[in-house]
Structures are given as C-alpha cells and as structure tokens.
Amino acid sequence: MSSELSNTGGVVSHHAARDSSGLIPVVSYARRSEDSRQRDGHGVRYQLRINERTAHEQGCIVIAAYSDNGRSASKAGVARPGFDRLVADLALGHTDSGQRMEGVVCVADDRLYRRPEDLARFFAALTSRPGRIHVDPRGIRDPYSQEGLLQAVRSLDAAATESRARSRRVADWHWARAAEGVPHSGPRPFGWRADRITLHPEEAQLVVQAISDRIAGKAVRAIAADWCDLGITGTRGGRPSAQTVTQIITAPRVCGYRANRGELLLIPETGQPVRGQWEPLVMPDQWRAVCATFSPGSLYLHRGSGAPGRTGQKRTAPRHLATGFLRCGAQRRDGSMCRGALCAQKGRSKKSPYVYTCRNCGRCSISGPLADEALERLVFSEHRGVAGPSQLVWDRWRSGEMGLDEKRQVVASVITRCIVRPGTKGAASWDHSRVEPLSEHPGQAGWEYAEPTGP
Image (cartoon, rainbow, N blue to C red):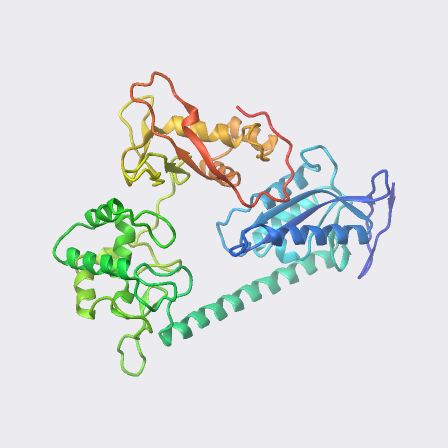
C-alpha cells in the first residue's frame, strides 16, 4: 500500500510503503555530545521519546532505535558506533531483526551529521532504495528532491558555523579567566583543596618534597614509586606515574604562575607572567630549576587537549587489540587492587610474541594473543546480559575484512575496561577467565541488536 505524504513544504513526490497498520516504518536516531554530569544517557533518551512523538504525528512508527551518547559529530576521528550501524542497516534495507525500514526520524539534522563526509554517507545510504523519507519535528522531507538535498546542505553549513562560533566563545572565555588569574576549571589540581586556592596540607608537602628531590637528582620514577608505596592517589583516583608526577611538579601553578592552552600567560604591558589567585607552593626560581632538569624535548608546559605531544611527535597508533582496555588485577601491599594500565611488550616465545604487562607494579602479565582472544570472546558473548555487536559485525570480524582500528572501535562500543587477574605460574593451558569486564559501555541505551552467535 502507498500514498502521497504531505510536508510543510508541499507534497512529497514519491511514495513510501506502509505496514499492515497503515503506518510507515522508520528508525530513530539520537546523539548527545556530552554526558559529563549525570552520566545516565538521559539526553539521548529524551531525543528518542521526541522522535516517537514526531513519528506518530507524521503517520509513522518507530521500529528500531540507534544512539550515540557522549559522542561529538564535529570532531574528526570520533567513533560513532550507533551512526555507523544506522548507515549500514539503511544500506541493507532492514534492521538486524529483518524489519524493513522506510526512513529515519531525528530531532534535528545536526544530531545526524556535522561533517560533509557524514552527510554524504547518510544520504547515500538513505536514498540507496526508492521511496524513503526523512522525518523531523517540522514534517516529512523528500531526500531524493533537489530541495531536500539543499535543505540538508544548509543545515550542515549552519551546524559548522555554530561549532566554530561556540569554539571561539569557549576559547575566549578560558583566556579571560586565565588573564585574571582565576584557577583552572575541571578536577582540582593535586596539592590544593577543592576551592583550587587553598593548599592541601599533605599533598602540598609531597609536591614540595618532590620538587626538592628532583632538583637534587632523584629520578621521577622513584618519586612516583614512593608515592605509590604511601598509597597516594591522584585527584581522579589514579595511581601516580612518572608522567603524572612530572606534570605536577613542572606545572606553572606550583609557583603561582597562570598558563593557558599549554603556554605561560604574560601581561601584555609588562611581559611578566600572570599571577594566579591561589597560594603558591615554591618560588619561581625553584620552578625554573625543576623544569631545567628535563630535556627541551619534554615540553613540560605542553599539557592539555590542545597541546602537542610531549616529545613533539605524533602518538603512534596501537598495534594490538587489547591495548588501553586492560587494567592490573594484582593486589597491592595495602590489600587494594593495583588497576594500573597493562602495556604491550615483546614476548619471549612463538606462542606469545607479545605480552601485556602492568606498567605500575609489574606483578601482572598476560600473553598478548590470550588477552586479545579473551577480549574477543567477551565482546561477542551471548551470556553477559547486555546487547553486543550485530551478526553482520561478527561476520566481518571473523572473515578478516575488519581492520585493527575498526575492531578496537567495536570493542570500545561494548566494553570500557577489563581487569586481568594474575596468572598461575606454570599453568599448562590458557585461562580466558583471567580477563573480566570491569564495566559496560555507558552509551548502549537505545540501540537494538540481534544477538549473534559468538566464538
């Protein structure tokens, strides 16, 4: 059955197939860039509810939902598993459960795309079959018409303009705060209380002693090890490492100076460093002295998301599947779990050409191929009680069509971190149960999958 569909701009020139109830089957998509406060996915849930109302008002019915929580659409290189599945299913013409899809409903175009390449992917998949529609709160749009494409391009241009303006406003706001000596926003700096102005007695003493020890020639790794033995954790709960200790003791804030975007902020009229509003830990000459103990290639001031790498070189891409996903499950002296990151290193046997070893305590190590295989089993397991990748993804993974980067994106869409329990010395066989998922990915709400047959 088919009929013409009215739109705010007139009459759609094509026909959309309806189901037995007389409604047009469409799929819903929602995306939220940030979910930093409540971290419960409420933003995408609200969008999906609005999409259901919009579909009902336009004579449609939502048969499947896709979402990406905490995922930017304007930044290059950000994986959006929900959007990727939507595009793939549109190209196939049906959902994982075999239901035919006749269109897409979304609260706004910028939820779907903010980059030209994403617009091209979406429209190519949407119009890969005849008779489909694009639905938003303003009505039903014809994606095959010239006006429908122009409207999408106008939405893309408006989204790009908005992103540039917002980025500029945020950068100016941070610079103005820095110029007045206001402390950094975000997590409190180590050594100061929650107000970021008053010194934290215990932490401040540790930083002052670390600066003195480093000037005297003590290795940063030794300082980090001492902090670990004392049970010290960072303001985010992590264990101290040589890199974090270096960033703490070389930060301009230790002597009261203010930096912005990785550079020391100077007063334009005098050229003198801007003084912060917080209590300093050491004098400026001590800060300069500890910074001088590091080579120029360390770029100690270069910190933050907009700063270059510490060595001035691009970070190499991971060469193994489980890199970044594994955490140490060994027990520390105080009885707590280490939870340090396991890093890939060269192995000593043909069966284990590489191994993952804890960079903090060094007491937990696992064969690289074993860890990768265990991670694969967890991702495609049918018994973890959560939805996993589709059968199509599993088929591509197993056939060898999927590259390492794409495999890692699939893992990240299901699992956040895994704990690796220490192995038994002299064990004759591999124990996949040593790798246990620590938490599931928070952005699963709203996705619909068909449970695959895993390994």
